[in-house]
Length: 129
Image (cartoon, rainbow, N blue to C red):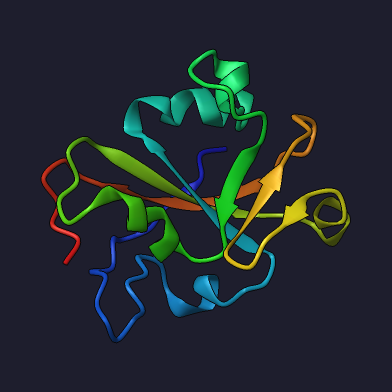
């Protein structure tokens, strides 16, 4: 089943620079993961993988932000490629087995895969602020 595509909400100071609705942004079981749009189908088919598993880096965990604004923080003001931000849901049991930080979580075990609730597309050239 294909996850729901949500409309991109313009990030502003009023919405704390988030791109999803406030009900998703404030749900304690919902987290956010940004990736290049070319990875979309692979994630849908095979789940989320660490940079090490993908052979593109050394990071052994997959990180998920507590708010979508954290996915945008490292991008600067203009997006230079097509991106997707996934909204995902972890069960309480899954969250017992992840590393929790104030602004994100890290999943070290590939078998722990969240349910994809939906996503937004961030087009190349999009101005964040």
